[in-house]
Length: 238
Picture 1 (cartoon, rainbow, N blue to C red):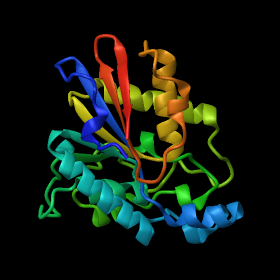
Picture 2 (picture 1 turned 90 degrees about the horizontal axis):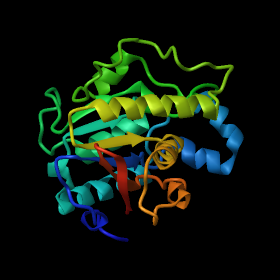
Picture 3 (picture 1 turned 90 degrees about the vertical axis):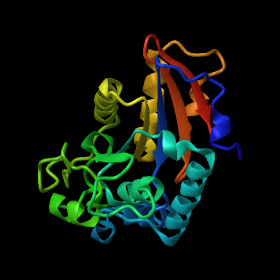
Picture 4 (picture 1 turned 180 degrees about the horizontal axis):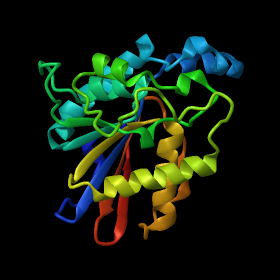
């Protein structure tokens, strides 16, 4: 596998914004869903957390991020507020030895726009905000002001069209951020839609194809280089 540092054949300059897209590590619903898709409807999988293998995947990615020097370049980490994503973001990007009650370096923000597909499946329902703040005191929840999960509907699953529109809002928000190098820790389908949207709305290098939008593995990192003057100018994959 190519190193993270080896992913960047593109020059960094003041007009570049780099997005590092990370899917969460293996979570319990991934294991149970592979055995039986109906298991994803079980309330026992509420806000599914990482498995022991998922934690090992996070530790491996953390080591790679540090060894490559990427950790020291990251200015902002944006994470889904579901436990599996926040566990991944914290495990990879919280500085070792940092006071758990202080703000993280780099800053980690929970953003509802990058959470998994909404509705029906309990594994995709988030915890109360008070629980999230208690478990992850180093994460900034300032963009989330609703205690209960009022976005998750037990009777209605979010359509892919609705998800795609949500991803556009997320990209517009990220685009306007002042940071130049940003991590987005999210879910497979959300990350695929990010890449599909960028491919559909930008002038790309001819070597970049829709095939690059294949599903992410657990704890996989892919990086996108954006030219803030023109749009995306290159994509590099791990």
